[in-house]
Image 1 (tube, helix red, strand yellow):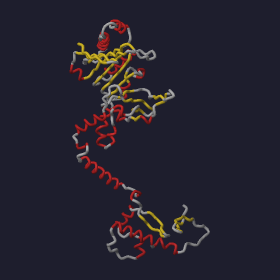
Image 2 (cartoon, rainbow, N blue to C red; image 1 turned 135 degrees about the horizontal axis):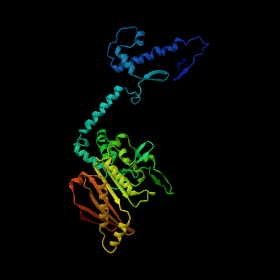
Image 3 (cartoon, rainbow, N blue to C red; image 1 turned 180 degrees about the vertical axis):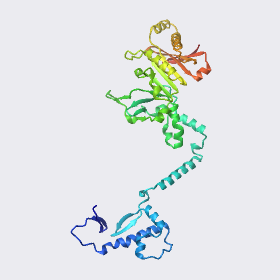
Image 4 (tube, helix red, strand yellow; image 1 turned 135 degrees about the vertical axis):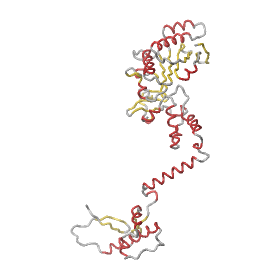
Length: 405
C-alpha cells in the first residue's frame, strides 16, 4: 500500500510521496501542528459539546491528556461526532460541518419518524383537517372525488410488456375524478385507494391504443400516459366493461376477464350484431360470453348486457310497418322473446328475473337503430318489476314510455 505525507504549504493541503533512496526524515518541527494545535482543538470541541468546560479535569501528564480520551463517555461521543479539516492562514483546524451535511444515524431517523407521526396526529386533531370528520363522512367525500358517474366514458385497461396498465387518454379531468387527494397522507391513501379501483368501471382493451398525428400517421400511445397495475390494485378492480375486439373475449370457452380480475363483481357487455368481425359470428360470441358468466362465475352480483339488433328480416319488416306510423317496440319484443327462450334452454341465470329495457336511436342521416338491454342483479330480482322502460332518442328530442312486461 502506497504511503504519502500530508503536508501544508501556503494554506493548501497536499499529498507527497516520499523518495525510497532518501533516508532522512522530516525535522521534528514539521510535526508540531499534529501534537499541539490539532489535539487541543479536538479536546476543546468535544469538551464544549459535552459541557466539560466548567468541569475539573483529572491530573495526568500533558502528553497522555492529548492522546487519550478524557472519560469513557467521550470515546462513544467521539465515534459519532465528525469534523472537517480546514486551513486558514496556514493554520490547520477542525471545524464542524454544516447541519445538512452531517450523516444521519438510525437513532436520528427514529426520532424524525416519531416527530412526523406526532405532527400528523396533532394536525389531524385540528379543526381545519378532514381527518377530524367521522369515517362515514370521509367516505362520502372520497366517493364524490374518486368515483365517476359517466356510463359511457370508461378508463382503459390495456396489456403491456410488464403487465396491465390504466391508460388515461385525456387525463382524469374528463371523468370528473381527482385522485390527487390520495397523495395528501397515508391515512387518506389507505381509505381512498380501494374506492378508486372498486367503484369505477374499467373498459378492458386487449390492444395497446394508438393516436393520430396531423400527418394522419398512427403511433402507439406513450407509455408515460399510463399507470401500471400491481397485483394489489388488480385485486381491487371489480367492475369491467367489454366492447368490440370480439376475437379476444373468449379463451377456451371462458371469458378472459374472469381470470384477469379475481374479485370481479360486475360485468358489462356491449355488442353490436352489425359489426364486421372478419367472418366471426357475433351471436355465437355473445352466447359464449353469457354461458361463461353464468356457469364459470355464478357469484357475479351484476351482469349488464346491451345488444344492438341486427338489420335482419325482422328489422326490415318492422321498418315497413312503421313507415307511415309512429315507431313502436314490437321488434324489441320479438328479440327479447328469442333471447329469453335461448337462456332458458341453456339454464342460464335460473333463479334470476331479468330486468329489460328497450331503446331506439333515430337520426336524419340514417335509419333507426334498435337495442335491447337486460340486467341481472340482486336489486332488480328483489324489485320484480313487471314493466319495461322504453326510450326513443333522436336528434331533436327524446321520448320516454313504459310498456307492460
